[in-house]
Image 1 (cartoon, rainbow, N blue to C red):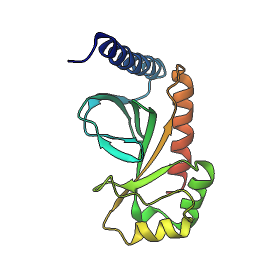
Image 2 (image 1 turned 90 degrees about the vertical axis):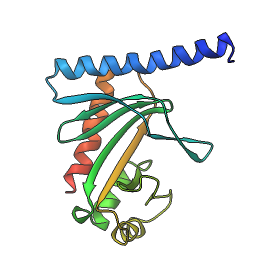
Image 3 (image 1 turned 60 degrees about the vertical axis):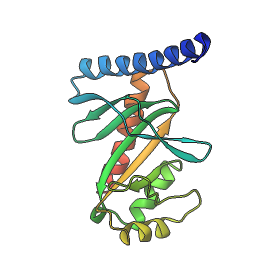
Length: 166
């Protein structure tokens, strides 16, 4: 049995995550953004360099024609999908220049990462092209913040760079 202190810590942390998600939902409603909110399991979190499956629910907003904004234990993530055929070495380079911490991975196999820090755009594009994946996902992690407006602004910037290349 977990101690009351540990349970309270977990409880407070999850409440904080869901409160931040509620703030974003209020902003999306106020700005008439078309979205769907869900609570999903089976995401992954990197703990000490190892991907760990999450069997617990986290809040995720799917913004119509753009991508997802999710609230996870280690921060906020943006996830955008692109068809492999719409990508080029130049486009991958543009993304890396704007967002050096981006994660690039497959849709069918989300544990298949195409980018490790220091890889060249040419190498990443080659790995994407030779994979069985038809859809490539781009993920950007940010620290948890209280400002829903900042979250939405950063998301729209990320989307504009990713979608600009298509």
